[in-house]
Image 1 (tube, one colour):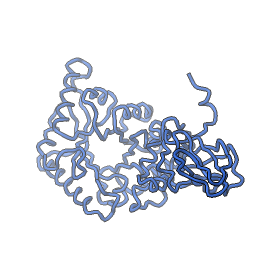
Image 2: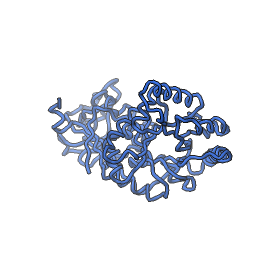
Image 3: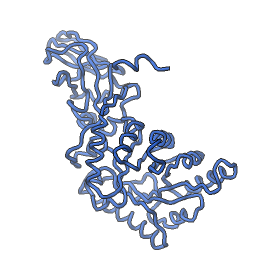
Image 4: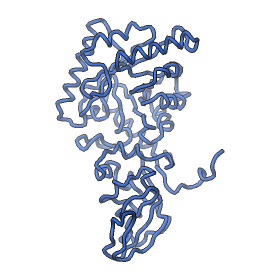
Length: 383
């Protein structure tokens, strides 16, 4: 059943510019001679993995990274018609019992410990015995090395543990990779130290006559800040969506892919001395026109954005007044006399503060701003 409301203009929407997505992909691809892996985990950072995957594949992307088997399955189905040889890598943990799905959909899995490798191997062998997988089935794996993030990964000195993966008849080692903790700070010595640990692990494997076709260590920030570390492949994440990894990493030419919009649902006059919103946290110092917007923290526009925040109405800033509610928030349109019910209000993106700017007000990062936009906010795709 298709709801009638899906066919009509939404009261709020996240407008996704696929043109800007492709622009950012091509801009960053020009900065490297390495293969580019597009990171589209977390539903493409809230932008919609299905549409982003297809758009990027049409633009020439041939490798993607996600965080779960459900995300990998969605991307594989989205890429039907683009070729089964397009790589999809799960960067984190997958239940060993889902190993059959990994092989069915030709998904590469990060392997980060000897214990996890054994659990995957045992599951694969059980599926073979049960006839669920053919006897010659092998799981493509990328070996994760923990060089200082202290999250997941083999110790760089555990050459024995990593080397043991190569003769396994159930695995096909294809990649070796790590993740940097501070690559968004160009002057941080820790990144060079992590790269040295990675190289030591790589050299340890090669000393035993073992290697993989693909090496990758660079995330978005490292693509810009550490070009000598690009190796065979780089992982393009936040820059793909038009945001810089941090204030220390400047990437000229990026375009925001998501613009969050809503409309004015109500305008009324608040008298001097009256309060606005929960907790009576804002008191009007004079008579003012207050506009209500049908968006709130349940949509991902969280309360922390209210502190010094504003939205754009008719091209002008309308300061947020009072606390942001679950489904609504209030803004001051006293200085926008032409503001009317039904006017578009832009919360961030093109023509408004960037996601990075509102993140700074909330003491967080642009990544979180994008990922918090909830499922009840329709994504509207433009080309």
